[in-house]
Amino acid sequence: MAVIDSEVTPFSFNLAGSLVTVTRQHGKPSMAQVAELTKLAFGVGKITPEEYYQFHLYDDALSLEEKKTFLGRKSQDKILVACIPQQWWAVSHDKLLFYGLLKGLGQPVPTTQAVFHPFRRYGDTPTLGSADDLANFLRHDARYPCFGKPVCGIRSVGVASLEGYEPGDDSLRTQEGRSLPLKEFIPAVQEHFKEGYVFQDRLEPHPEIKALCGERIATIRLVVLLKDDAGPEILHALWKIPAGDNIADNFWRQGNVLASLDIETGRVRRALRGTGLQEEELDLHPDSERQLVDSVLPCWDEVKARCLDCAAALPGLTLQAWDISVGPDGPVMVEVNIGGDFNLPQIASRQGLLQGDFRAFVAKHVKLK
View: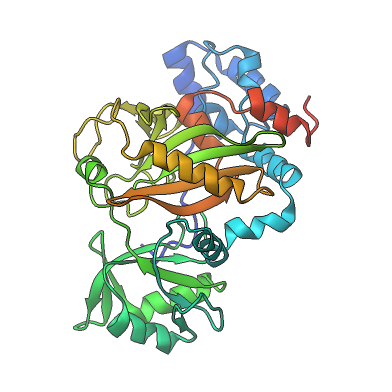
């Protein structure tokens, strides 16, 4: 295992095996699957073979028109580039810029202990300009437990949840029980995250969430659309839940759980892990065995209110995906993404994105067939 993740590890996918399994389990001939897959691949959604099975588009309980509302990653990039002015993207991608802006707006954000970068500044937070500075911080000055992440990272690549420093072997002890020698950890951070790395106080979950999901942070994902005439509106509400040995809640980390939430109440409508033919619906959290489905998240009205307030302060980001933690004192704004991962709401809800207000929004910028 690498000292620190530097890229996403994808779910495994086997096209031939998927064709055979769907034929056996659903009675849909392989040629019919291939014909439909080809049609969707050349449609607006640009669906790949893997996404065809991720979204269960082989299921003929969905009409062809309903299947055409699903969007794949190839169409996602085209839509985001066309719909969101490029000058606004840095607000999302650069965490120091993002946190500085939200602090100025009086919104709760994680407390940053130090920034590892040759020269960047973040208020009165210490800047660690060299490997020696970083080593000294981790040995003597860090407040453990703490959480490290890249300034410009996405999908939790490169994160580290640190319990403490072990002087005996000059290493860091992680939340999941690993030992990271400083002589390996620091060069890995230098090599892979040249735009900087931040160390923050590790967030604590709300007691109700801790009882259900444990000590790790399970963030709420709210997808927000900004309308020209009416401002921000929440289109989708999801809950990303860590499980097993995973330190972060991103769904690409195998074993993690994804839940669909009722926007009005914060109630869990559906929970699952795995994708495509390996997807498994869950009623209980796989670790705590506490009830997931029908549970209601705490502080839900405040979560939505803070999200909409923040969204309105970023009018150039016309499609936003907020990750929000709920702690003992209420919501904490963890990050905002440009549009977010289109796959997540589609997997969670088994509904395509390209409908209603979102379809109208996309149609203003992208030619739809």
